[in-house]
Structures are given as structure tokens and as C-alpha cells.
Length: 365
Ligand code: USQ
Image 1: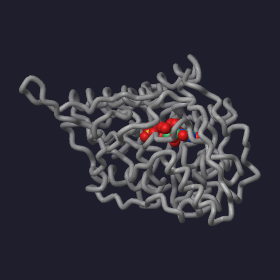
Image 2: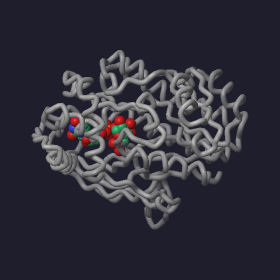
Image 3: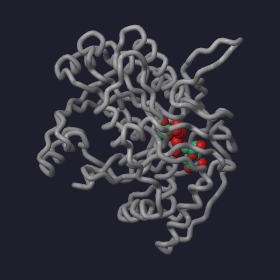
Image 4: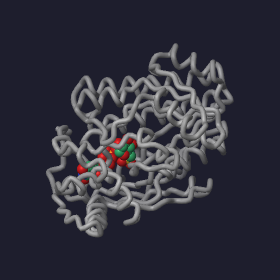
């Protein structure tokens, strides 16, 4: 919708994998939305902008090759991955589905571009979680190492903490290999946890709302805390809450993708951009949600729960994020006003909140 509203010709393809998993795991979003063709129709009615839609599974090479050949895009935004860390840690079937889907789609996409549209710029959604939480500054994709008196530039070391994040590490290696070998144009966006449910296009009609999850499987922590505040349940800080991540507003996600599309990567090297606007710890986030909720006369409690994940709860975290700023990113930071806006919107759908899907149902061990 963001690109169509800016005059681009957009083709969107989906196989409803996330929707299917959400149904299978009782993790329905707060606001239910119609399928892709219905949403595109609604958007056209409201805005006058057309989006062509297709339902198909891009992990099937025929589907991928056909759509790339038919539409010959200038850019492909690849969002077609199973995006939940907890889901990928559930059991063998979920792990296998995540690994196969994510790597197959990336692999097919690379080959479709290489074979039929080598000028196409691929924008691949990676994750800041690829880097993990090392005890040194995190660079933007690459690091120069001096060893025995000689220097070389390498991909920054990766150490993910879920299988899902590990599939993105593997994607990065695949992309790096194919860019080096076949001179493709690829940008890998290392995105942090996203929050928000409002964009100018999505706000045209409630049925155009982005997927807003608050469950333990698909819900990211800011969205979860906002819903927990409205539902009157304690904010679920996992462990000590010193886990620090780089966050960004949904509006900034859209800006970043647009900036990447408008200035394509060159062919010599995989372009890696760290995509977040600010860092904070889970405890600091919980405090901010608590104080914003007070302005709505909601008294929030914060509860440190046993951490279902295996991750550092107290660590150094200093990632570089200058690439997107240089391309023109204007951040929308997490202010009390942003939180209040989210809370008001969630409050209007309070009756939909199912408190049974808030507590962690999946543990790493
Ligand atoms: N956390 C809590 N309480 C909660 C939920 C989460 O303390 O109720 C903590 C987690 O333990 C973690 C941090 O908050 O330390 C962030 O968790 P999250 O669930 O918001 O994000 P994560 O699982 O890391 O994954 C999300 C998206 C994923 C994306 C990633 C970016 O689901 O698709 O890749 O954010 S990043 O985290 O930078 O890798």
C-alpha cells in the first residue's frame, strides 16, 4: 500500500503461511483482516491505487520463476519468511518448516533473479538478531579483522538465539555468496523488533490494519506490553529484563524499505543495513509503558517471569546504525504519545483480547 500510494506498480504474493500458523497455534491477531485480494480491492476503493495480488507458495520454484518472469520487477521486497523465533523453537516439525520455507524462498528468489531478471534489486528482510549480543560494538554487516599482521574485511560474526534467526544468518551467507559470484544487486536489512499498527494507508479502513499480534508466538514485545496494559495483566518481562534490542516504528520500516528501493545496492558486495532507530532494555520499555498508561488512569504492574528463552539478560549492546540515516531515514521514536495512540487503538478492540495466549507457551528447553 505504501509503494502503490507513491506511484509504483505493485504485485503482492502470499501463501498465508503466517495466517495458517496463527490459526494452528491459536495465535490470532487482535484485529482480524480479510485476505489479500479483498484487502487490495478495499485499498483501491479507498485510495484509487491498484495492487495486483496472487496467492502462491514461493518456496515452490515454479511459482517464484513464473511471477518474476511475468512481472519483471525493478525491485523485489522479500518478506516471505516464517518470522517467529518462538515458533521455530517449538518442536521438530516447526523447526523444519521454518528452515525449509525460509531458505527455499530465498534460494528460489536468488535464482529467479539470476536467470530471468539480473538487473532486479532484491531487498531481503534480515534481522538484528543475526548478530546476537556480542561483547563488542556491532558493525553494519562487516568487520575488518587484523590477524598475524594482515587485515581482511569479513561479514560481522553471527550468533543467533533461535532457529528462525539462524535461518536469516544462513540467508545472509547465501546472498553474500551469490552476490560475489554473479554480481546480483542485494540489500539485506537487519531489522530490530517493530511496533505499531498505524500507517497513513492502513488507517484508511480498519480492515487494512497490519497484522497486530500480542500472543507469545508472533507478538513482539512493545505490542505485547501495550495489549497487556489494556487487558489489565502484568507486563511480562522475561528474566532480569536487561535484554537490549534495537527497535523501530512500523512507519520507519516502510521508510527504510522505500529508501533501499530508491537507491539500489551496487553489484560488488551484499549491502547490509542495520534497521532500527533506538535501543532500550525490556525493563526500560516496561517502565515507559507503565508511565504512559498512567496518563490513561491505568495502573500497570510489571512482573519478572522465568525466561522461556535462552538469551543473555544483562549484556553490552552497541550496534552501529548509520547506513539508513545516510540514505535519509527520519526516525519516529517511541514517545509517550506513540504509546498512548497505540493504547487507545487497542482499547477500542479490548473485547478481542484473549488473555490465554499471552503467557509463554513455548520454552527453549
Ligand atoms: N521479551 C520479554 N517479554 C515478552 C516478550 C519478549 O521480555 O513478553 C523479550 C525477549 O526475551 C527478547 C526481547 O524482549 O529479549 C525482544 O523479543 P521480541 O519477541 O519482541 O522479538 P524477537 O523474538 O527477537 O523477534 C522479533 C520478530 C522477528 C525479528 C526480531 C528482530 O518477531 O521477526 O527478526 O524481532 S531482533 O529481535 O532484533 O532480532
